[in-house]
Length: 120
Image (cartoon, rainbow, N blue to C red; front, side):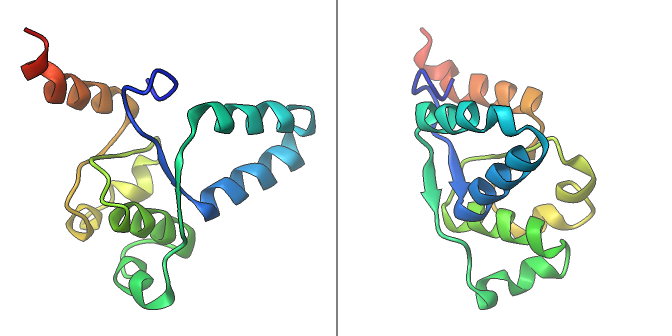
């Protein structure tokens, strides 16, 4: 959907760096392919949040997850899509943001709901 420009991808600098680090360590033969995928997706890369912006998020999440969710909040995303249900869907995390936190299958349902008025 992102490659077709039906949706936009927003990602923080920290996430790009972490993905690059993990793939380089675990799957070094795939690093170029990973970088090509990111180029094809053309994400909006947002800055990492400052310590003061991060503070309320640290009350519910560890530093890495807090930084990711805070960056999404600052970017004013429409939805936060993750497979990490243990951390991002923990009690009270949703109160930190004004957008839904969903797994990919639910993101597709949301997308369908958002575009339905335009399908007729």
